[in-house]
Amino acid sequence: MNGKAKKWDFDTYDSIDRYDYIMRNVKRLRYDDTLAAVARKAMIKKTDVVLDIGTGNGNLAELLLQNGCKVIGLDPSTKMIELAAPKLAQFDGRFNIDVCENPFLAIPYPNNSFDTVVSTFSIHHLPGHDKQLAITEMKRVLKNPGGLIVIGDVIFKDNEDKARALAQYHDMEDEYQPTLDTFPFMFENAGFAVEIEQVADTVYIVSASLI
Ligand SMILES: C[S@@+](CC[C@H](N)C(=O)[O-])C[C@H]1O[C@@H](n2cnc3c(N)ncnc32)[C@H](O)[C@@H]1O
Image 1 (cartoon, rainbow, N blue to C red):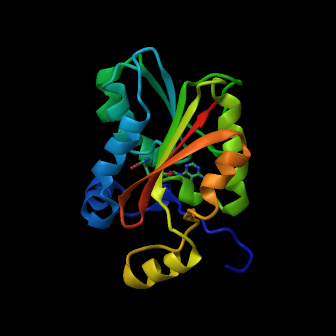
Image 2: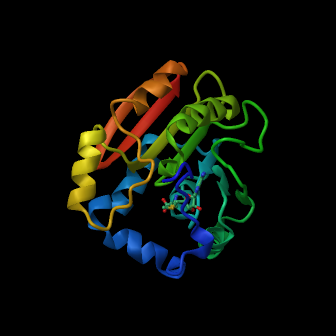
Image 3: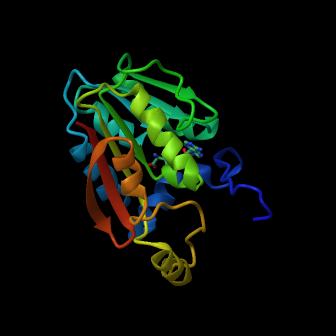
């Protein structure tokens, strides 16, 4: 890595127009099941205001909006957001999506703005310690008590499990995927009660509630 952070730039990704197709065809991700599990765990009510970080193509936001809530999406990639626009037009007035350089670490909203923060397949873009900072930042914008964070992503049991998966799945990138031996404890350190649900071999949902 030469001391340089790994960075996946979706704006220069050649196959971005095929993003949905690619995600759905990487069967080990169980992409639609993961999004559905995050939406279920988020227990959305019509009156809820939800923040979707790394909202990208808008597929999770679309599922949430079907429950009648309001969704704010943040993503650093203009091209990913362009994929979301046609899917979300039908929810005009209940959805807003902003390009934001650092949506986990500098959320451009005041304290106590959201009932729920959700994110799918995005937190693995953050290096280790940034994840703890992101949890502090997500907590800042959540209503307290009662606020909920639900994150679905590729998560490994530990670094050995990660090495095994990288050797087994040749299409898997070595990014900053969280591990179960540290990630849930970051939420507990920040005062959340945590639940874990496994969706696939290397895909988990972490739900963290402010009690
Ligand atoms: C694999 S896509 C997931 C998109 C969508 N949430 C889904 O489930 O299909 C990752 C998304 O994270 C965004 N992203 C990249 N770096 C990020 C960062 N540091 N913070 C938040 N989002 C980031 C990308 O632009 C992209 O839209």
